Length: 95
Image 1 (tube, rainbow, N blue to C red):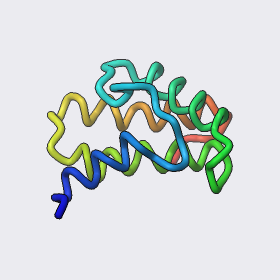
Image 2: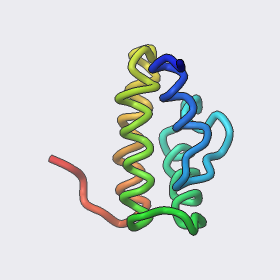
Image 3: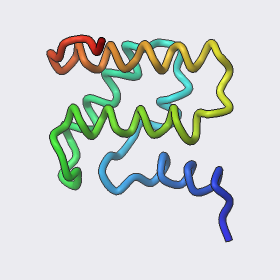
Image 4: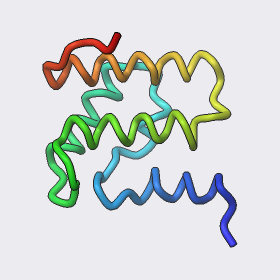
């Protein structure tokens, strides 16, 4: 039986909705992460919702599950990537 970590890693690496750039969540550049997720979401023919929602869902999933043991510095980068992703899709900032 797979552990939770392995399950989360499997979802991140083998998402049915998005083909993610390898190691995208390890980048230290929030804009790069956002651009990569946007490209993946817009290119996907398998996603079930609009590109912005699919990209944000994958980022949030990673932060909440696979990224729960991330160093504080990297978690801040990923949280900043949410704002960059909103900007990339022309969405307003969350309050």
